[in-house]
Length: 159
Image (cartoon, rainbow, N blue to C red; front, side):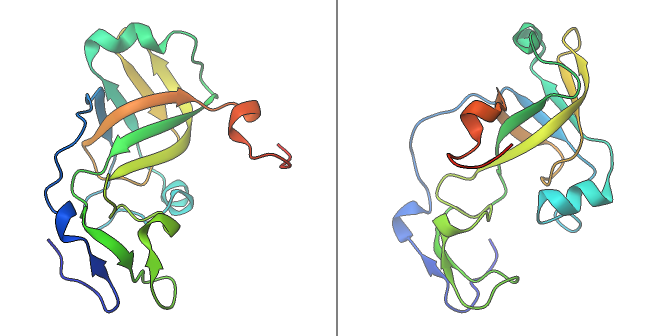
């Protein structure tokens, strides 16, 4: 595990949590590794590449109703992130912030969320092509949800 930056705070009780178990439903395939992964979706989209969601083959029928061009929300497990930081000192801001005020992968439950656009769909192969994502290759996928304007835009925001 990486060392702490100035101002960062660790919760000792979160170093080895034992909680609810999630089922990994597939893997996210990206061109990124620890040394070259973009830090946000905007940069991932600018850099481009091949991005594929590979589901457990038994889950292909669960893709029914999705379509190319549709936005979906991916929930994934950032399995190589720290899980014990309460305050962090990100490189892109001055000072520290609480973990819940950041999109950092380092959090008590390292769940990542990304809204992506489906570029290819093959229920028979249980795969989705997506426009981009900012996670390491072979990241475990825990859920896919359709993005809908009615449900996902905060009140008072235009689509």
